[in-house]
Image (tube, rainbow, N blue to C red):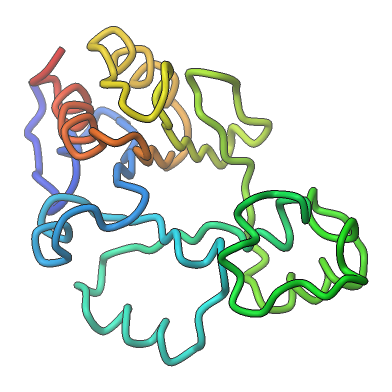
Length: 197
């Protein structure tokens, strides 16, 4: 068997095998930041869905983690969700009446275009692979919510299926967003390293 290098916060990379470096993390910190950055190489920031943070906040986040740690950000709901979504209750500035019916679903209305200006442009199609497949397999980003609801614990079969789905894809992301996400993500890392399921 080829030698393995343990990469801090992620699955081992097997030298000389061409194995993909799967980026596994959680949606939200879930555990203390100090513990998190030792266990996972990436976090999906949920805050950005509700309101894009100020540059000073982004700078503070970056200085609090190791240089190789990665943040992914959820697209702002102004870009992705229609104005009748209950998530709009968390907006700091309520939508003006004129914007209702003009936001979300990646429209090119002035309101959505203004949202794009406040948001990075490097978007990918994010899906739960237990429900549907991405239309951007060359930039795979899976967000697992739990096949039977948020309390779902992913089975060994599901984790093996997930491993098979990411196999051969360039630098895929697998982010767990179900309630037992920490355990599922750690079990998935074990599956990737050949130690689990």
